[in-house]
Structures are given as structure tokens and as C-alpha cells.
Length: 111
Image 1: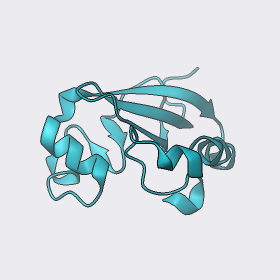
Image 2 (image 1 turned 45 degrees about the vertical axis):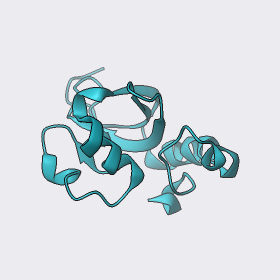
Image 3 (image 1 turned 120 degrees about the horizontal axis):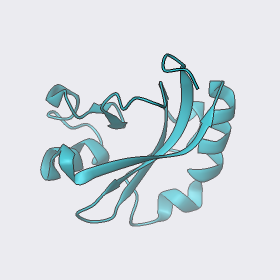
């Protein structure tokens, strides 16, 4: 893949302190980590989590950005396919789990 290639990734970010996870979609160059760990949070921009509006942002604020690790689950050339996978993963049963930060169903409407 080219270094300037833009893709849509479905990712899972894990808090290594409590093993809670967040699954989402992000448009990025999959070969270069841009600092995005999920739910609007960039590790190099404290203003993206300092005034937390979600469980995930509050956890980043509490534990610090170094306590989170993001992995790529899948990579797509278009956002539709990425959102389809996210919708399949982040469903009602997933949201009921006690080890997740997601607060809404996956898919484009979950944003």
C-alpha cells in the first residue's frame, strides 16, 4: 500500500487498566498512526477528552492516553462497508456488556 493511501478502518481500543473496549470507524492512512484512539479522542490533543461528554472520553481523562491501545480489526476502501461491520459488531447485545465504552449502536447512525 502507498503511504498516502486513505482507508476506513474499524478499530478496537482497549483500556489496559480495566480491559474495557471501544469499537469505532476512523478515516485514516492505515500505515501511519495519527493519534486517534476513538470517540473523537486524539492522544496529542487533550481538548478532545478534557471536558468529557462520553464514558470513553471520561476514561481517557481518568487513566491517561498511554493506558489505551488501538488495533485495527478491518480496513475498507469505502465508509459504507466499514459502517456495516461496525453495525454488526456494536449491536444491542454488545452495548449490554459491562466491558464496553460504546454508548450507541454501531453504523453511520451511531455517530
